Image 1 (cartoon, rainbow, N blue to C red):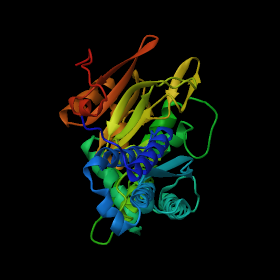
Image 2: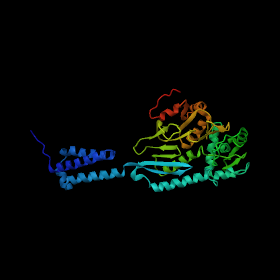
Image 3: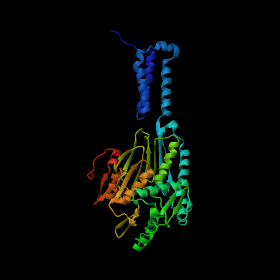
Length: 405
């Protein structure tokens, strides 16, 4: 009976493999180390089949050959290990976060990305903010009526988008609602929690109406037919999210998540190589925000509109910051929040606001008819009930049929 006796070369190679396997056990959470260890295991098993003595004459020492090969693989794995960088900051009265995933060797410097993002967000703020007195939007709000005013291409773009959304929702979304927002104390100048009179609401409504804002496409000018005031807070964050997404994609990076004040744009895969997972939080007033559902998203924008963060109460009645442009009053239905998933964050932002104004019944019917992916959380007694449109089901981690369907 023949007995295989390992040579010195094979003993040394197997010893090297054992060491590599030990390293693998220490770093077993990395799939790249696992691949390297598997490669060395293959060499170990294949050694009896190889004519190491012939290789020895050419490579001087097969042990060195295996070691150098392993080192080269490990070095390459380290450079190509998938990871992410995170950029965070403050903007638009809230916070932002940008996560970019990819191979370590291909990601930009965090400081450089931070500077580029901060400059772009500052430009958008200077154009669209109602909290900056000398912003372009505030200058237009103070401008004379029935006069054509030159505005920047960016302001023209977002106003044009706003008018489209206003027309499509029959005024449920309306950026000219600023006089009513200010009247109810939710504007830049905070007021006491006082309910306006019917006469005050009537007077403010006379200055509201998207049909009183006129844009001229030929020379990118705008005119106000009445002394209206524009508030872009229901669309500006979504717009800014898309603009930051453009910056990241221009750097040839396509695995990212951009978030500003809860509005999102997601693309590609996260650092683990999976689609992005986003939790829908319960719309409660306390700080314990549990996730009702988990969404799995990529290549889309997402936005949520609700009345559980910004409101005031008088005599036990809640008054939401979301104003119905038609009635001139805060929304009074049982819809706590609505989340929309769309192709872009700006569309999701505008549609979430519109559906929140329309309410749990009309909003759901509108979303279903227009194939909008929307998730509604409705107050029922001491708890909440949920419903979602057929278009939304594809984004749920575990899609299930709601009793509302």
